[in-house]
Image 1 (cartoon, one colour):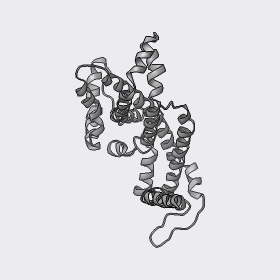
Image 2 (cartoon, one colour):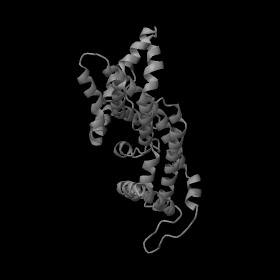
Image 3 (cartoon, rainbow, N blue to C red):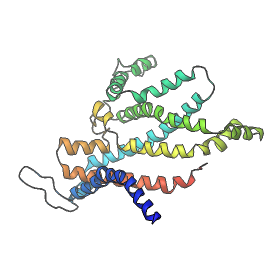
Length: 291
């Protein structure tokens, strides 16, 4: 009797979260999968079942493949750079340096800046001839670069913005994890004659692995949901050089108003994120050293 009463209480406590999860996560996913199998309604013409036609169109869509390749390059570049820079900054501000509070604030400031402010700052940096980057490169004869207007540099310019903006956010998690490591572990390794690099590799880094997994998951999600930087600065150009998958979904769904094809693209994006999550929780989680 007591066990069943506890089960009822537990179910009631979980019910609000379950309702929210179904309403805002699972139901939209199912609706999106169903919509991807139907044509886009036009005026008085209702949607009709077309099966996998949208997916066949996708296989022959060069913009889709371009956006997918760009997104993979973007993710494989921004994720390790952001995590590595965040860890380096956390190690620096966790040490006993002068002006530590000011340094922490400086590192974290890009995270809290609104997107419009970030876009304006970096548009000034990237302005040909008059921008900060060209002004710094001009003495070396390397000025006159159209960073956002050239297909060779536009994606790299967005990558730099993302690393600059996200590293400070990830630093906060690493800093909190570093402050939870017992000094006794570090002292014991030092008494055993371990060099600073060995202490970091054998003691600090393994104890930071749970935080690294958490940060990596957030970095992956962020890499595949980027749309605001692209919308504010490049609109996917030039020549689709900065077209990322989520921005292409937005463009297809809201600019071209092809909701059926946008739903199919969304299913592919969800499937890619699901595969990455399975790898992270299935493989990477087993290599994490929990305390």
